[in-house]
Structures are given as C-alpha cells and as structure tokens.
Image (cartoon, rainbow, N blue to C red; front, side, top):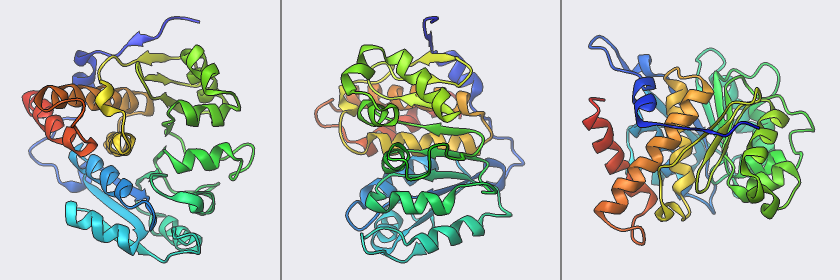
Amino acid sequence: MTAPRQITRAEVLGLLPRRAADTNKGSFGSVAAVAGSTAYRGAAALCCEGALRTGAGLVYLASVEPVIGLTLQRTPECCALPCRTDADGGILAADAAAVRQRFAHKPAVLLAGPGLGPSAGRVLAALLGIGAPWRGAVLDADALNALAAGELGDTPFLPADTVLTPHPGEMARLLGITVDAVQADRPAAALRCARRFGCVAVLKGAGTLVATPGGRLAMNTTGNPGLARGGSGDVLAGMLAALLAQGLPAFDAARCAVWLHGAAADACAARTSMMTMLPHDILTDLGQLLGEAGL
C-alpha cells in the first residue's frame, strides 16, 4: 500500500470554485439536508449552517417541526421542508419519500444522517435506491449506523459521488471489526470501506483520511483536539455537501472540506482555546480563512 498523500493548502485553494460577477444562487447548487429528530435537534442546524457558510446556493432542511424552528432561528436563509413525526420522534418515512419526489426534477446533493435517530434506516430507504434523483450524497452519523446494520440491504444502491464520513466507531461498525483494528491500520480501513461501498470514504480523527474505491488515499494534517466534541462532524458534513453541490467531484470535495474544517479549527483554537471552542465557532474562522484567499 502506498503512503497517503498529504492534502495541502495550495491544492485546496486551487480546487475551490470562484464566483463570477454574473452568477446567481442557482450557480452554486442545492443541498437537501434530511436531518434531526425531536431528541437531536442541534445536528441539523449545524450541518445546514456549515453548508450555507461553505457557499451552497440553496440549502433545504427536511425535518420535524421543532428542528426546523431551531435551525431557522440560527440561519433564516435555510429553506424549510416540514415533515411529520413518527413514533420514534423522527421523520416519517412517507414524508421522506415526498422529499425525494420533490427533487426529482431539481438536482440537489443529499445530506442525510445527522440527528436522525432510530428512524434513520426507514428514512434512508425512502430517500435512496434506483432512480433516486440525487447528484451526490453525504451520509453521516445515523445514516452510517443504518448502513452498517444492513437496513439498506447488503449491497445498497448509493448515488454517484457519494461520500461516507465515519469516525472510528462508525467505521468499525461499517466493516464489522473493532475500533482497535480500525485504528491499528487506518489507511487499510479507509480503503476497505471505500471499496466495500463503492464511494469515497472519509475516516475522521487525527490525520483524517480520504479514500477512493480505486485506491487513491489522502491524509489531512490540519485540525486539533478542540474538534473532539459532538457537532464537529455535523459542520463538516454540511461543508462537504456544499462543495459537492458546487460541482467538485467527491474526492476533491472531501479533501477540501476536511482541510478547511481543520484549518478553521486551528485558527479558532488560537483565537479562543481548544477547551472552550464549539463546533459552530469554527465557521467564523472559516470565513476569515476564505476571505483572505479572496473567496
């Protein structure tokens, strides 16, 4: 196995889309976030803000009403797709199917998983499958747990340009091995996941890895332990979905997202501290970073 190639600032800034003077919101793609439940409300707000702050032209949130209310308080720019609540406090599967139909003739990147809770498998089954309209997908958090549990079948049909974003525990479940085994050979685990599911895999943690089914492997060296708290991955998932929506291929979008997420976290830690920084704080530093780059 070849050593992972380190992601650099220069390549990331070279890949990020520029904004021409005659563009409009339609020029920068749409993200359809299907996230949140009555028990987990903040995850949806964080992933939607991450997507908006990373340049997506339109961000839609399909969720239950308490989640939508919280998200719109933080980011009124988000478009709401209210869903009914099922017995587990999550999104009713029939309403998830209606979300899929809504985007049948309006290409969007699907962002699914953060905060979905026990309803995740039923929601994903309604969103995915042959004929699904998505131009790409980011599956995170509870979506990964549903995938690992086989709730989408042994060979799930995932859209082209799908990215999975597991932390080591989720990766262990996806591969049916222990966390210790994942951490003992992180490159092998990332590549195995990418090949198993036929899509880009992002193995989060110190030295985040981005792997493709064809064997490409990149390592990120930005970021710090201040990211080790709930919500950091939700912000990253939104950032990644936004870059997919703007037309970056999955491997490029993933490399850019993890580098930017980590670099913003490093600036945030310097501005505040690793102990006190919160996931949404890094979006301020992301703006400073992108502004300095003329973006």
